Length: 352
Length: 257
Image (cartoon, rainbow over all chains, first blue to last red; front, top):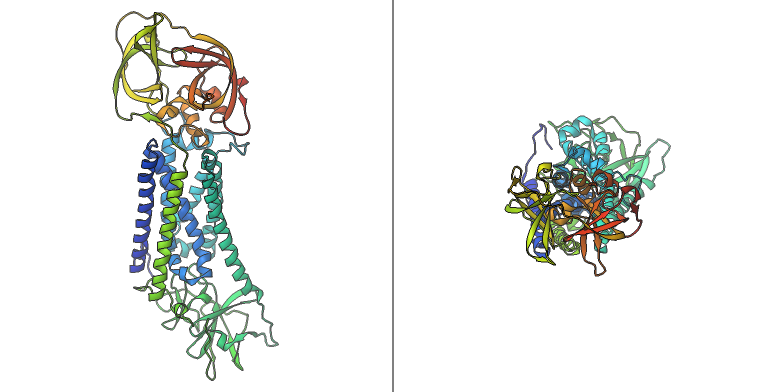
């Protein structure tokens, strides 16, 4: 969490994260270029670099796309998500290097503007087999640029989280364009089926993980508790909520995170104001609901970030009767204090 | 609550919880092994690269007869003669970048000297001429060398720009190279038809119009695609040329020849 904008809010974890990323990418590119030049002594270094940077970017994009659903399915992957924006910006820089090298190599020093040449050199737009693949990569790069340039919290705050989130969902359009870019480009020129198999495995991973994560979330949405006469909805037995954790329930189409802590129960919107992370998958740290994605915090009884921070989420009335937790589905405005429900008696802890 | 679930990662705290940190190290190791496996697979799965060379920034001096029929070339006399006829090696001439070389008409059929970088693939050669390096070497113009007609021929292949195909880029053919080939040919680099003989060896046959004119922009729509071209095949020394009108080029669907 930060109150003022800085280029990068460095901390120890981010430095470790970025060091590992830089080391891994250096190893990948060195392996690709050096071993590639030994295995293929006739290959030019420009070709190996274009291919090395392109494949590194595409591989990293797969990792980026898989981290989200993996973190939803298994919280051991959450630390990878913490600094995912640095992965995204790095991936854009790799793709940009691939793109600039390619434009210089294939379009510069000719009789046409290199950028115009991307669209004009091959005009077989009516043919699927001969469709120009380079414009597809160009448009994907534009999307990645848009995302990388707005990745900072400055843009997140000013565009608002929902708009920023929708903007960054364009990564799936970029991914689709890049799959087409690879399929209509490299795959058509290479003879080995191994490349097509690799691409298929990558797409299958991205798709299956997203479907699995969506199925998990759908199970939450499908559990629609019945509404009582006074409007309160029975959510679960108190002991079903692990201490300092939450149970997420869908009430009136909105996901609500119901936390148990200090002998009390409070309910907040499940949507973190930072990047719409799932607060219900977070926990109480230092008395605050803490988002599992980036550690943004909210006081559980009022949904407001502790001063001097200003983020706020809606709150919900709660009630505990006969060991059962009830929540009223009508939200209070974000940051409104709502008296937590007290738990009388001991709660038997359950393993989760 | 199990031990691992009891741990909670907060990125801005100094250290990840112990067991979560251990899991994370395994994940990072796994991702690195995955990246290395992908890199190795891609390296070994790439199609082999042709034995072609571009002596970039290495310059040699050349002396020979300049001809422009139909593309600027330097004919360098080989030692000896076959059946009393001098034997020449043809060096196609191109400029730097994606440009053709345009020598002055006054040098046609004259002995010239030039300096440039060699581009070669097997026994097919080209020189990227260093600007301002072309100078006359004296003497009278030589008699025009005539192409020997080999008759009508139907050749199957892919139109390439000879500069990249002979060595400036590798690969210098196929769909990934289409845009570059179009740019080069449009800029004046001689177009050639890459054909394969019955033993699978590839070589380039120069392309010209039916009237012998250079073809550049006229063939752009057919570059890097499988085509059949019916025309008149001729030979001069070690160079083959196919004269045909682009309007008769036939685009082949399916596998590349």
